[in-house]
Image (cartoon, rainbow, N blue to C red; front, top):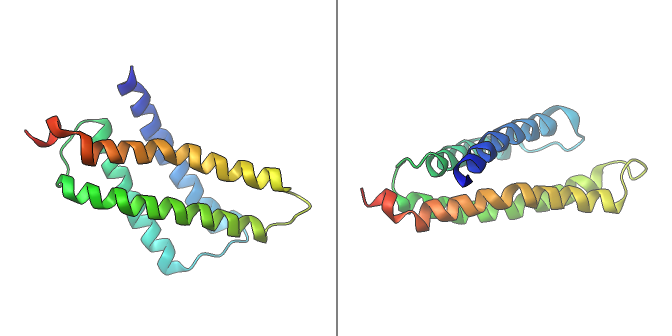
Length: 132
């Protein structure tokens, strides 16, 4: 059962990543630095590849690489939450109140927590996969 849930999460993660990028590019007042945006896109692609490896039980690169990606992921998630806080500071206060802002940040954390769990499991706990 968990394998099916992880596969669903994998596709949901991809869709959310695409919509998040489109939202930042076209539908928000938040103007990211283009260099930052390229770094985010490359990192999200690497994250999707790692999530794929975990979900479908595939060896991709080496576990040391994914340990590093896990640590970088924590930094990216923290920065993403910080960016969200900054973004919510730029939008019209008449449209959104502080509970909406808080809810948006909580949704980000809820969506990204399984990703962090998957990266941790892939990098540190998938010994049977890496010992092949």
